[in-house]
Image 1 (tube, rainbow, N blue to C red):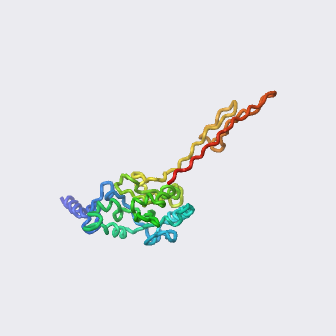
Image 2 (cartoon, rainbow, N blue to C red):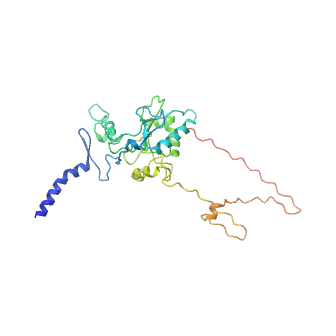
Length: 295
């Protein structure tokens, strides 16, 4: 009886802790239950990087507050901006609206537009476009909200960004520098399409710093694929089988010899037999080169 009474007291004492663990106080009058899968209003939980782990982005990149990122993400960003600057008309066009945000800063951003005469009536509406505090990729130091200047007729963090020169350039080239689009159109998380929000995961799993980044976003990348998304494993192109010499079997395309030796194309029979004239080589049509589609 004594042990049963002690157990009952323990259950009563732990009840408030359990409730706190499954309910998040986001804003005044906004307490939201965490889902059974650990998500809050569709968003996955993320820890907060410390400022000492971050470095500033390249100069003149941020539009407002300073842009802080993980060092490896900042390095690839610098290379990406340099590549964009080589594209006619793109120098200085790709900018940052927002980068690293602490959880408390995220709370201010999230709660600022909830309430009477605001954009959203409640946290559920706000979470369609903004991650709740503790559930935003921005806290990791790997995420960037991109913008552009000049941007006539298209305000920041708007779907119209996808049709700007900067937005089109990112879709075509950002994965080449380790960035993937976190929330594509129709994503299963139920988050609004965000063509401006990209996260860094490295160009390959072996790239410097990619391991920790991919570990942080492992569940997001597994269950809610980015688009464009950087593949977890870089596909290896198939090696064509070698042509065997007369009387010998061909080398298996997967063998070490096949990987080291190039395949040899068959030769045209242009050598004539004694006393005969060699046949003329058939003319080869010049291949037509198609121009790339305009973007």
